[in-house]
Length: 346
Image (cartoon, rainbow, N blue to C red; front, side):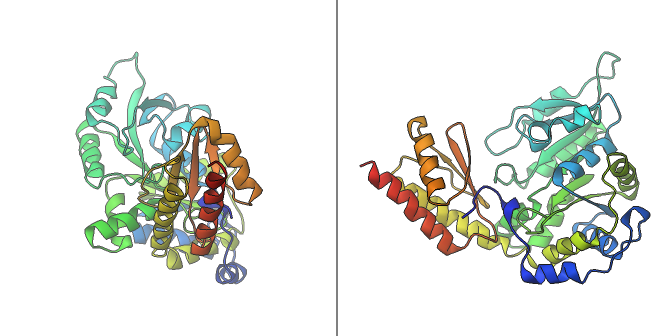
């Protein structure tokens, strides 16, 4: 049972059939019909002029940042944002973009007054502030619905662009749809409305084996396509994997609600089975965080591994992620294993 990430999913038989039957061409020449169809489909779904298929969210985020910012320009970003902390410093190393990290609140937002204060004056001593980058979901938490429009208004007032790391955009959309009585697609389009570019992973909750999309204007995507080639990301008969992305968009968005329900079941079960030893955050989407005393961190992790349960863990916290390859029965079995560990300590 692999709870480490929703990246570990494997293609379903129907997705494999779609991959096997995909018509192919050379995407560097723009001639792969399956890639082209995926890009056009995603752009139309989310309200953008164009889209570009890439191999990973790290790549499409970097392409987005580099398409907005020239060398020596700056992006305002969260201190624990994926684009800043978890992407190997790519914006600085490969884009010569200066990140201006700001602290994030518990819901993933940055204080708007702090964002505005971080915008550099027109002075030769400073990098030129060009972009504000957000992430939704952030650690499984959904940004408040009013926050995107507030950031958009600030960006418009100060002449900045906006980028969204929407690796789990559709998880956020499924959550918001329930809150606002709309469809997940309508909710996703609403989120995207406040951003000049959005990166969306197909290989996380949507279950494709590889791939991510950058969405934006035709001009931005043209810049990103050139940058993708420069970074060695040009692919040839990529339709064989792009077909999985199209299948994911067609079949795996609304089912994310099941992952969210399973995460809630898991969170409640972990809290009960541990008799309060595990501090569990109530999940909004498909990610459950469990904090524990350091005295049990290693032994508890070893107990899970010995019982074929894989989780991500560091610094006294575990991250459990539900996805389409985790069933309700898997969760019930995992809770039983956890209960066994804490019973043995009594």
